Image (cartoon, rainbow, N blue to C red; front, side, top):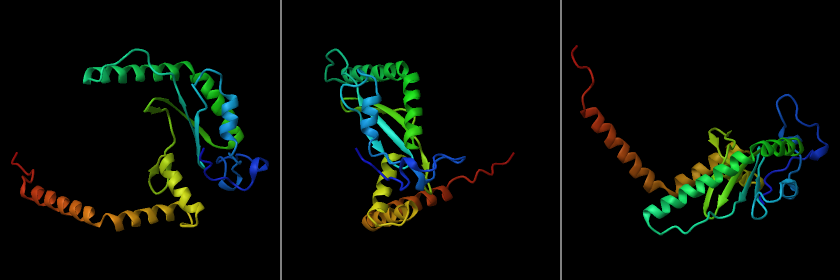
Amino acid sequence: MHRGWHGGAGRGGRGPGRGGWQQADLPDAADASAWLQGRLPDGWFTGAPEVTVDREEIVVVGELPPVDGTFEDTESGRADRAAAVAGRISRFREQTREERIEIARQAEHRYGRKVAWGARIGDDVELFTVASVPVMTRLRQPERIVLDTLVDAGVARSRSDALAWAVRLVGQHADEWLGELRDAMARVDDLRAKGPTGDAEE
């Protein structure tokens, strides 16, 4: 489990106020994976779920039993398997909705973070509603964890600094590609300028 970032107040902090949990008040979520493993009903997943935590969100992804039947390694067979997987995940999502909402409510009270769910069958993963958090742009949890790692390592002072650092890093290692992209955009502008102006006579 990725433990993400933990606030200094622990569970004895002031708790959520009118604007939700403050970062300094966040309860420690180090035991979130164990708590959820004990709280989840038996039989939901084939094993312990994968639990990923950051400052805003806990994402729980569990493995479902494989779909029945043998699917041929053809385009039609792969499409049939994909449909069967989608159907099984959809059934799990609908059948567990009310209990997942209650578990999420309890976990949010305990850890001060929203809970999102997902299901996996083999290499196929479907995430249900997950948070998209503003960080100069809207980022999902995997991207937020990258920024938090840079902050925790002292590379950056904040997520905004970490995002700027990552952009500079990409720029340094992608100068040639970015140059080609800018050239392509310039050619598009030239072609657009040579096209009709749209000021046709009435």
